[in-house]
Image (cartoon, rainbow, N blue to C red; front, side):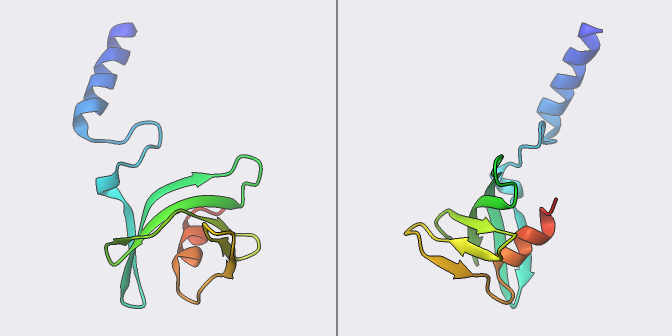
Length: 101
């Protein structure tokens, strides 16, 4: 039994398949919206407020600072604390569409 688990671990390690839900940077989730390529580089869900996501994105290859996206209230909180509603075809709707509970 231990030998089988070891073989499976080695297989996943060398096959490039993400283990334990970790998404490598090279496989960032990207989508085209309004002629812009929006890529989710890193995403963390809040344990206490499951509708909040801390997300690092890039728009057309330009990295943006980490912001908190609130899928319940449809707004994001910028690094400076400013609350901004989701844009019509922006990253907020993309994030909430892919990661709803």
